[in-house]
Image (cartoon, rainbow over all chains, first blue to last red; front, side):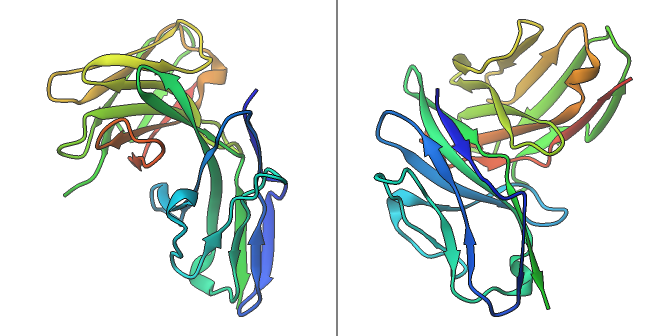
Length: 112
Length: 113
């Protein structure tokens, strides 16, 4: 079965330190992976997707098919990065439609 | 643009009752999906609708149903509520049957007592 695993419920780092939020997936096909973020009192929003290979707010994520991982990284954490981060796998659900399978999320806390 | 809007924001129901949650997608978006988020968990897929047709269904019992209207708004219905149905229900819209770019509403917090 398809599954997304985020092993850390909580990750605390100091401001200016590097950040790595881990995500591993289980999927037999060609994965489409995303990172979503939820800041305090805001709605869930897309942060980045692997297919575009972009950097958003200093965050990057590389798909490693050999290790079935899609870790989110940032070289220097900022206080405004404190939020809940979800890794998600897009799965084909038939009739041209896709559904998202989310991990349980990691709460990132950046200490001033 | 107000984004995806959901109503109501909070709801308290008694076991065995029925509930209807509503969602208005972003203008121009024809795909609406529903997710359930239990405390401490990530969102779990319930349904996807596109052009008023059900295009995907998650692992939820038949007590859960949904529909999409000609204006692309959507309703999620849950019958015979159980305590375990207490959760945040999220609606998301997409401009088409996108592979993963979803725009989420603020959610409806359902409490079953």
